[in-house]
Image 1: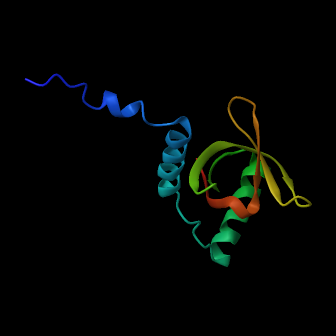
Image 2 (image 1 turned 180 degrees about the horizontal axis):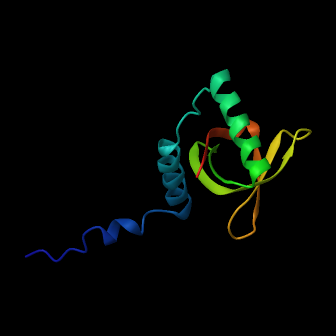
Length: 109
C-alpha cells in the first residue's frame, strides 16, 4: 500500500501571492452589476426618505458597494445635498454616509 500525504503535499507549493490572487478571483466572480433605476423608483425613494426623516421612522436601505449588496437599517439623521449623500444612524449609534448613487432600494420597516 502506498503511503501518501494526499493534498497536503501540494499545498506547500502554493505561494501566498497565489492564494491571495485565487481569493480575489473568487471574490470577483461573486460581484454583481448595479441595477438601473428608473425615475419613478428614485422619486419613491425620496418620498420614503423624507417621510422617515420627518416622522422619525426606521427605514431599511439596500446599498450597492463594490459589486455587492449591503442592507442597513436605521433612522435618517441628515440629507447632505452638497455631497449628494444620506446620513443614516443605526441601532448602535453609528452614522453611515451613503451616496445617493449607491441606493438600490429603500422601504420603511
